[in-house]
View 1 (cartoon, rainbow, N blue to C red):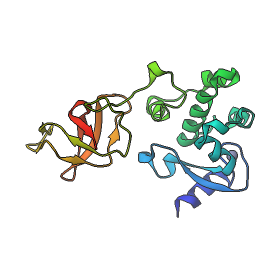
View 2: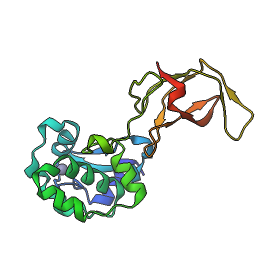
View 3: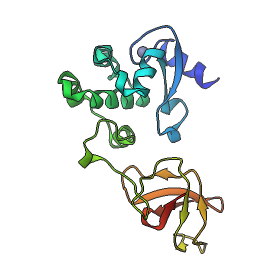
View 4: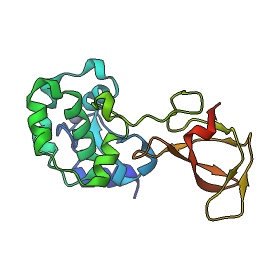
Amino acid sequence: MSLLQDLQNRSGNTCELCTATTNLKIYEVPPTSAGGVDGSLLACDTCIDQIENPSTTDSNHWRCLNDSMWSEHRAVQVVAWRLLSRLKAEGWPQDLLDMLYLDDDTLAFAKATNEGLDDSEKIIHRDVNGVILETGDSVVLVKDLKVKGSSMVAKQGTAVRNIRLDHENAEYIEGKVDGQQIVIITKYVKKS
Ligand SMILES: [Zn+2]
């Protein structure tokens, strides 16, 4: 079965956020590394538009989270958490947020885009020059690095494409060197 079919079955062919039944699409919850059914949900155009364009957020539309935040599906919980965080200054979203319990992994996933977080709570990855790194960026190593658990040395100047961020630690990113996924310390890379 395709991802779309899986999501249609799971949701009964309704928007998993607001229960609309038309213009439904797959929404892959960023960062999409989780992917698949667990990292995606079925949502309508209205919901997806507002998720992706925060300036168009209509807080009344998101009263629907009152119900959908109780979904058993992680992707739905994560999006609900992000939207409620975005809107928390309105009061009622903060009340819902206070009731929404997420396990540690799910909470880390929810916070991974820094949506709705105060500056002090954000985990921001910076390269050797202080430039902000994001998932999918390419970097170059600025010194030779021993790769933990192997005899390999990743040489200075090596390009690492499509990095991933460690969402619990601003000092770590991950990327592939010689086909091997390794953890790299941000101060030893330069964004390219
Ligand atoms: Zn919707």
